[in-house]
Image 1 (cartoon, rainbow, N blue to C red):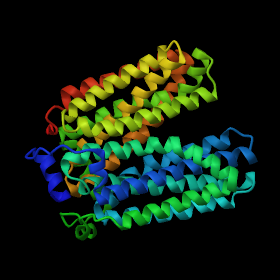
Image 2: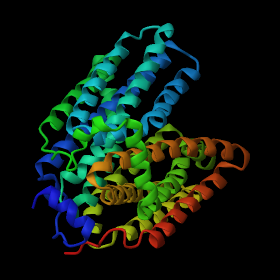
Image 3: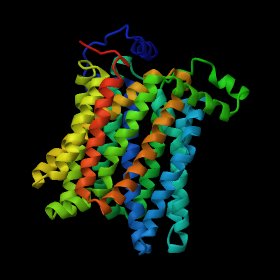
Length: 424
């Protein structure tokens, strides 16, 4: 069965895909290439992050020196997010991704020029540039995934893609430490650049079918602004899609609040330090990997809306448990559940947004998803810092857990029937 046929059967519910495993999914050449290239590139990104923080702390003592790159990354995602979706629907997605990877490979090398505090502006421009280019890459990548796997495997594929990011969070910093120790900070920068090139090569080898509606030919007949309005109009008129985006926003707002306050909470409640936080992050990654493996079973046994709802309700409970954890083992247990649930829920939400959008507008829909996640995360971090100061960290975690669980309940009742259930 071709991947194109697989996508159609998900949308119509005419096909129940047979049992499969993660190994079966990774045996699909095109998806395996994309997944491996993305995992390596994301590991490289973590190496760059460690190298950049090391560089900043070596040449500047100002906290703003670290804050400014964070703003440089977040702002372009909001400003250019929808434009990236338009490009993904106008031009060959394969070459959009390759061009983005090669541009980022070159941008990263500019960090090698930074040697003094007066040159930190180069780092800020690179951070913003990487975010801008990424705003074009990710809508194209996410829009292409349904063309690489049959419909029955789409949820599992999205789960593995989501899990690869968390896996990179575990492997990347450790590998970066080794690279910096053996070859210096600049070796980590070169390594990240090389991973972008390797990712571009893996994408070059992919077989991605062209857009089916002749969007490339039509691109010259409408402005990019018109294309953007068309994408937004499609979202506005698709009730299931709107609901999926609302739930994505709610879940992001709830889960995003945990990121900023985890360290001060562990320190205040349990007297934990950096070692314990690192252990919790490792367990979070382990839970995410387990989620990526579990999603293949869930995708053929339980309806997608129930997967989303159940995982978000469990994630909300895990956040509340984390807030009241009496000891470190309970912290680790709650964090593992959180990692597992987030990967599965996000993969399932991506499956809905990918499937409900025809191929010709899927890039714009995925850009909207990325915009919601980026904006929601930034808003969650800002609100959590504010609430943590005025009402306390524990109360903020409770609110975050309730919001996340509420998103799960909403998914169960509002996304019913959005996608078919896959059985053996």
